[in-house]
Image (cartoon, rainbow, N blue to C red; front, side):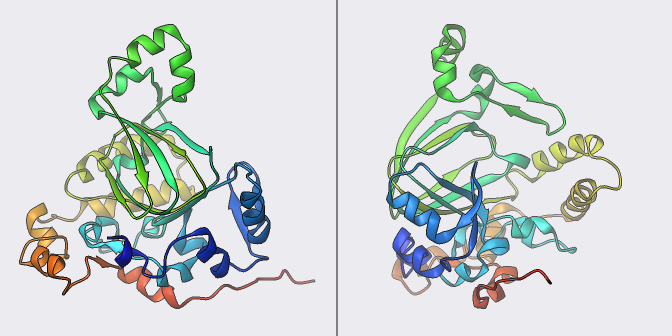
Length: 295
């Protein structure tokens, strides 16, 4: 899929050319810094991480550079009667230095996840969703989600380590050019083994929408009525809940993810197995702008 997802490449060199040097980019734990400073400090070996930054909000012109695997274009967030803000939360950009990590967690809203790695290598450690209780979680009631300590911390505690050893664990390395799929509610921890560039997205479909709606409904009472967070969550629940979604097999065929001969067309090269959401297609022609405050 790699050559189709990013035909001109997804690399530090390519991104350096596409992001204006003076553009402010969000860097985890450092607020914002200029793109030139970010890439310069990465070159110097600093462990900086531009992590999970939405393309649509921060870098919409990058939609001209990257596409979405066809197998995920049936995402429900893009198919509701009422437009949802979450359609612009992903895909996201990840650019990190060697040694940066995403500590052990599960993704919000019971969402499925995919990632395309353009440069570098990432070590992934995943656990079976049913074994989350063995990872010494704490329950975040307002967000209705398990929280975990980093694996190194769990492994350093005798009681947590003993429990951890009972969990079904899969450890592997994601390499440049590969695409990864992670099912909903899968605990995972990720370490960048070298400087990396990746694009990823969370999505909802028949496999997880009911779980997502249940979690969202349980979260709603913790959101302050009248607040933007309450309104956005309420809108998402209403929009996703009112639709009678088709069967997964029928849906994938209709949206290019297989069935109806699509797989043969992809295999023959006649149809590239990638695409873009309509809401993002028009953003690919955006250009960077600088907004100055009035004097």
